[in-house]
Image 1: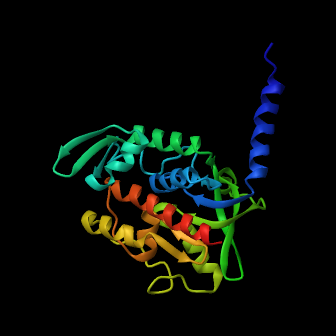
Image 2 (image 1 turned 90 degrees about the horizontal axis):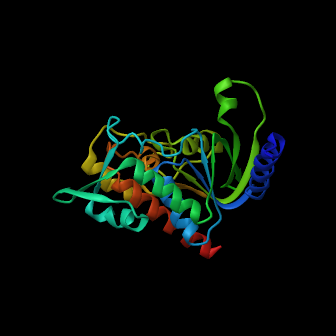
Length: 259
């Protein structure tokens, strides 16, 4: 016999047991786009306790839409090794360009990250940060539905050693830190510089350099990195997103080893 209440209990008890345990972690990643998920995979693979918050019902950011809803993405030769490791099939197009299914890429990123013990909370977002002694040490979370309904519901908090802003073009976490901390970001202006117009070649090149710590305890990856440090957007070429996620995971792993 299938009992509706037992089904409800199973979901509720399992979720809240996991959520309570995740209120303290080593890394909180805000945004489950390609760079955030890639970072989550490599961090989880290194044995780091990782929590990912995703505002949307569906993880993936702009990845599933490919280019203008053509669900294919382009990657470069140097980033193909990441997709090979994930088990994503690629097709050589010409020169150093490869194409892949945006949906297969997303499915494998999710699968590999989850299999490494990463916990992903969709329909949940960081509306604020916790900063103590000049360092970001966690986020303040709420349900996306609360935001959409525009009702006042006090949030909860989650603590971590590091926070990773992978919120894409809006660089939401870095903007909150800049607005509320009273201190300068680690950018030339001390603030979020802002994303520049489309220039794929330059955008891909500077993205890796821009993937770094933006404030004590706060790292940026993917388009959030270019938005914070003033790089161009790149469109549906995703090699840099993957390499950015891999780089930031290495930076955080190195920092955690020193603490």
